[in-house]
Image (tube, rainbow, N blue to C red):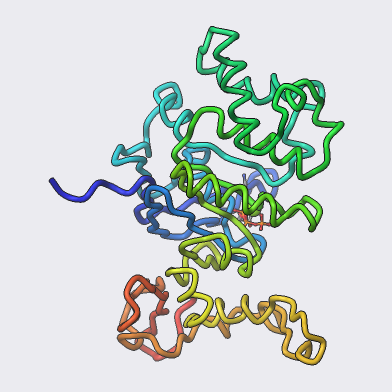
Amino acid sequence: MGEPPPLVALDDVSVVFRTRSGLFRSSALRAVDGVSLAVTRGETLALVGESGSGKTTLGRVSLRLVAATWGRVSFDGRDVTDVAEEQLGWLRRRAQIVFQDPFSSLNPYMRVAELVGEPLLIDGVRSRQERLERVHRALEAVDLVPAARAAAKYPTAMSGGQRQRVGIARALVRDPEYIVADEPVSMIDASSRIDILDLLRGLQLRRGVAFLYITHDIASARHFADRIAVMHRGAVVELGDAGAVIDRPVHPYTRALIAAVPEPDPANRHRRRAVGGADGADGDFRVVEGCPHGPLPGGRRPVLLDMPGDPGHFVACHVMSAAGATAPG
Ligand SMILES: Nc1ncnc2c1ncn2[C@@H]1O[C@H](COP(=O)(O)OP(=O)(O)OP(=O)(O)O)[C@@H](O)[C@H]1O
Ligand SMILES: [Mg+2]
């Protein structure tokens, strides 16, 4: 027997959106560009990158909520790329999503008991008693206690942090193995953010749930994630253990993201820099010093290469054209 397959595997996945740009014209936007990435059982993989880099699309394609235009997606070794939605009931139970906005993602006319119990109804759990027990267990797992009291509330009577706990309980009630948490704390007050991230970390450690944690905030990824994948313009440009990526960033885009983290010490504020540079050009991010094998000839795409002496740390080395100019990434 070989190694078990990763829980989630993306193999050279691209997602192209066609948008209408006129009556008869449409344009194509490559939101995800040739990404290969695996999430192993029980790990937290953070996906960081600026707005529009393709994080949400990548998370959704990993759940087969968005179709891959090219490439393969598999879950627990089963290829789900072309499986019809009616055949995906098992995946809908085993993989879940927690949304960014706990205000718009929860129906304000449903009580917490119904919101959290709804996935069980969809799954055909007929026994009211069993649904109630599982709802209470999920509420306790997110520290909404006493569960019976929380279950009777409407989300409108709750704080942002509490609502997000309801969203997490709704994801947990099916006992999933994989949860995509898409900016789960960006819309809640700063004082509750750490609590929610600690809660997710606890679920990962105690229940072995694997998370894809999507965030702009590379600093939070350091504390919350085992590994970090940095996304830039639809591609993963750096991947590795959280400590390696943050302490030894190689790709210039990763370095820029780290440099853009607000500096708490006013004396060092002048070091703050916006990602993308003053002119907003991406050219700075193409040349990677320290690329293990130097620029590769031919081809157009950056290639993820293992850094020598730093196992598991991968960096996209952009490819030089024959003329010696850096190819667009
Ligand atoms: N359904 C869609 N149709 C057309 N274009 C889309 C669609 N969804 C996303 N896009 C485009 O794909 C690109 C990537 O979007 P995505 O939402 O994945 O980025 P993101 O990294 O999650 O950004 P943010 O941090 O703002 O949430 C963007 O240019 C976006 O406008
Ligand atoms: Mg997003």
